[in-house]
Length: 146
Image 1 (cartoon, helix red, strand yellow):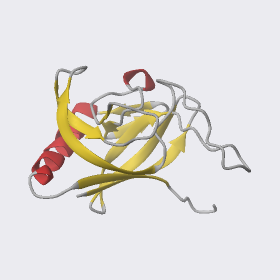
Image 2 (cartoon, one colour):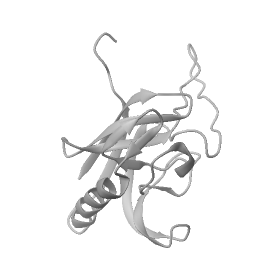
Image 3 (cartoon, one colour):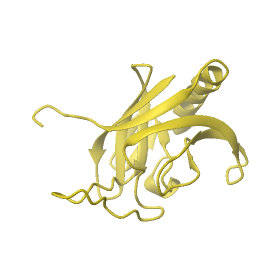
């Protein structure tokens, strides 16, 4: 299963993107604000714990027990400079420390109907876990005019 997260909406507090599952739109995802590379250099912007999103890239996804949440949740593996990056319900930047928060609706620094979006996504990931590897690719959406 291939998950793709296209980051599209950027504010000082959060990033919202569109998640697809095997090429089909699934839900919105809210993350912490995106840390862009320093313009004109190869130097990555500094990670700020609990305030910045994970780097662009491709990551394996597994399902494992989260001590913090007391339940089984999807976990992104091998994320540089981050540990414990999960996909879990939540609505706003205060609900994430780098994790991905599914939603159905969006507003500035907010996704709504997160429990419903998470439930549907989790069922797909859980079913796929038994038959195939799962990855997520984090991308910057290319918008018209760019």
